[in-house]
Amino acid sequence: MNKNQICNLGDLLEILVDPESKESLTFNGNTLYNSKNSFNLIQESPILFPSPISKYLNNFVIDMTNKDQFTSIEQYFKILSIKMYMEINNLDANDYWYKQHLSWSKELVSTSQGLLLDIGCDDLEINLKVFPDNKIKYVGLEPIIKKKNYFSIYGVAEFLPFQSNSFDCVSFLTSLDHVLDYYSALKEAKRVLKKEGTLYLATLVWNKKSELYNDHHHFHHFKEFEIFGALNELDFNIEKLDRYAWKNDENRTALYIKAEKK
Image (cartoon, rainbow, N blue to C red):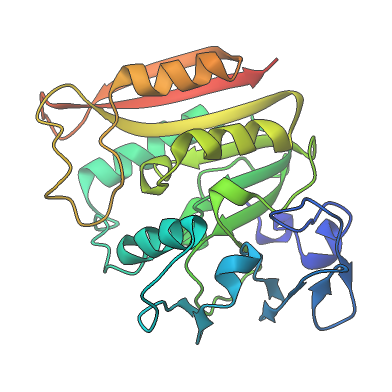
């Protein structure tokens, strides 16, 4: 995908909202704001976390180390921050299985078009290679703030900072298992999708040996019933489903799902 297809702040001002109240935001050249909250930018990329968490940003990291008592939402993000800032050991770019994932993802999103939100975009230099050229306008959303040479939105999947019915496509390409409240994330994805918009979901599911206590980075080792149950309850219509073996491991299967918002 051509980097010119990445949206900039000006492209998105009409659909950006306060992640909690969903009220519209105004841009004054330095910050985004409404009557209650203001949100800073880093390298022209807005930081749109829920306000109870924004106050804990220290050098662009959620830092709650000096606090003992938390509200429920603070407790939630305290848990999230523990895993969020662990060093993640991604597969090497030349790894066979990583290349397989990119190939399967490229096939999954090959028909995507229009305005697309990629949740958990991580390294955009890699993700951009997955999406088709000249068919989409790309918006990446990422919870970990770091200096980048491209535009993205800093936020969390459970509190998407966009107006309802804004996107033609939303993707979670192996990012959903990093979201603590995955159901709320899928519910938010549905909210921001236009009617008959497309959800692209790639994730591992565990057939057995799904214990999570020895995993530093993920919040979930999904069972199939969790994924399909959530999509069914949220009234998504599954249009395409591919299952692939993962690392020749009988305990895990890779699911690549294309679903439509009814």
